[in-house]
Amino acid sequence: MLSGRRLDLLDPSPDDIEIADIAHGLARVARWNGQTAGPHVFSVAQHSLLVEAIGAGLVPGLAPARRLELLLHDAPEYVIGDIISPFKAAIGDSYKAVERRLLAAIRARFGLPEPSPEEARLVKRADGIAAYWEAVRLAGFDRAEAAAVFGEPGPLTAEAEALIEPWPTALAQSRFLARFLDRSQAPTPDT
Image (cartoon, rainbow, N blue to C red; front, side):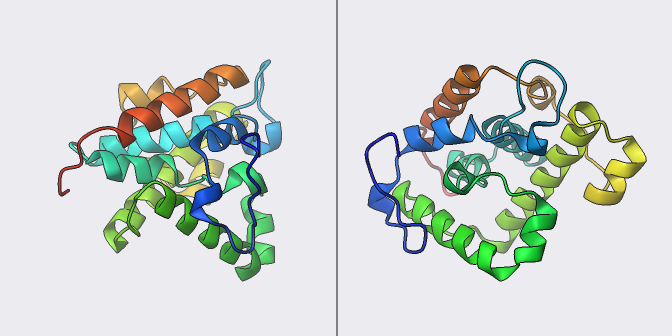
């Protein structure tokens, strides 16, 4: 890690996780295998910001801790990369076990509880909506093809709409980090 910490992927310690490492890594991992048009890739950091905005649009007044869960849903990819869904499915539980351990360590590091089933469904729904719009707007899918893979999308808020554009790496990194700091330092109501 850039922070100088060593992260054991098989037994990750929350003490070895730094948000600056996550922001740096996610801003450099390309969604869609980098097969998007333009001078910049659409990064996992940008995808995470999009998922957080979509989730907040689906549940107005969502507590900062729940928005942080949305933002960090793909945080393990800062060290293991954005392994595309078909490859994840082929690897099966081996990949998922590593991802679950990393996500548990990340939640512990930042004081987030395991999400409830309802919260987990929100993350999955927002992630699917984000994937649909990324596929259509950035990866060349037509709407029917994207709907067959990701389901029918929900509407996008203006905040989410503004996020579907590839940014330079440094901008994706700084915006991800700023959003994390904004959410992690906000008061946490019981929601």
